[in-house]
Length: 225
Length: 225
DNA sequence: CTTGACACAGAACAGACGTTCGGGTATATT
DNA sequence: AATATACCCGAACGTCTGTTCTGTGTCAAG
Image (tube, rainbow over all chains, first blue to last red):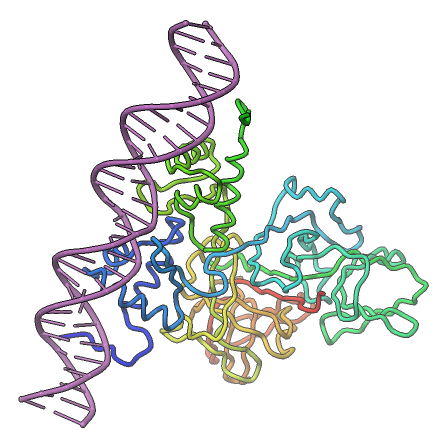
């Protein structure tokens, strides 16, 4: 009685091997050897492991550095990869000036930080220079589709292009707000992310301070258990 | 003429080795061997490399897995850290059934995937098992504070606890929706994340299918340039 | 029945690799 | 001057490791 797993994409052993490589790498911080894969996947011969590894390489699931010890890794842009550590420099809420990074930007005295996979970042932001994060406090940003507790990743900026989502300080209203920015004939249009809500129009003479551009918003649902 | 570098913390070679390990790991995705370190740092003897590696280990700069090929890595909380690779298995929009993971969903038949730093995940979700992601299409989730283009990280589930944000399929309305879930005396209350909006009440007899719990929401502002 | 693809085992080989040991040369200390 | 210490080299050893080759049994197609 043999297992029949022909012509299907991946067999049980393929999965087992992929799982093992992944967990081994996570625990040991380096890839497993062929023999270690065999022992942990119930394969007694190194040649059989090599046999499967070849298949997984051809199908693009793994990459191998031939002739090199433990030169096997899960493929993909970033099997375990580059993180950006973005400092959380404070909280943002309406009615108070927004915290902005100091010029020194020595981000190690930051109380906290969040790790973002580089692959999540837009191409231009691959350097964590000028990136910082804020935790949103209160419901004041709901018209920007941003909730209490959300984390906003920002890039310091004093100017913006049309379509950027920016953090602006409106001295007239004594308010920090996050809106899409559009420069139009004789005014700035601050468009809420929520399409059911109406924009704020600011005359070009009126004060308006752009504090930064929003790069990303992250909302964690901690209650999941 | 010899270099004098006594009694100081780290010498020139220590830094050179640390830099090399870091850049080698980044490029080759696996650690260098002792001989490779030697060649690239101008050290002709493996024993000297070993000599420095021992020092760097004692001083806590690196960690070593003895007897194991390429068992050297930079130490620290997150030299390059753990990512969860979550498969994006489809799009979600109101009026259509939500895609759910197949039993085979774990690997790369997923068209795309997103990388999430483990440090961002709630403690219980440290395994990418049962995690999947959906891209939200359309504005139908605005009352869940979720916008067009957002990425929702979900955990497959058929049940939910009070306070969980869940994806539910309402056959009566022919609608998939994301709401906070509360079980009450004689009905289920589906509470929108937006506190200005009113809940949906579902009688306990009426049909209601929980598809999964929302773990995280990610919004990328790609327009930043 | 024959053929061939497929899955697997075992052994053997050649390098790669970490480790160790004996020796060497400066500089500083006693 | 003698000793200690830090730094460094080369070689040898034994094991780890990827690769390759031969052989075996299964199964489906011709």
